[in-house]
Length: 126
Image (cartoon, rainbow, N blue to C red; front, side, top):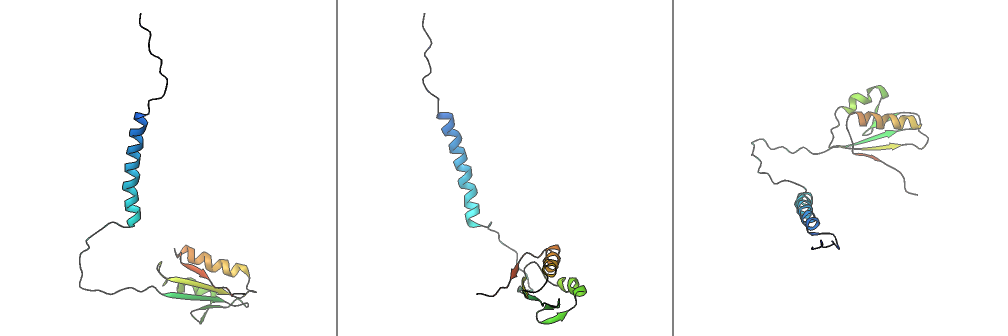
């Protein structure tokens, strides 16, 4: 009678096959990520006007007065003013150090509700 041969180790060939497939997938996906874009040929149009992103400067004084680009504006009409801000525009907020925190949070909250993400805060270097 022949005795069965005892298996002394693990068969790593299937593991190598799986790793090669995973490596191929990772390399394929990483090439798209490295380029950061998909090549497209866009159609041409006759009206060519570039939209330049605008910059808005919002200032809050210690007396709870609001200024947008240097023009004083009432708190109630701020939401109307923010309707003209697009997602590509940049907003900077300057607040006096004695300004109540709730006024600053109010501005941030209204901007976030409008979907504006490019918000910067201006501080003074010491």
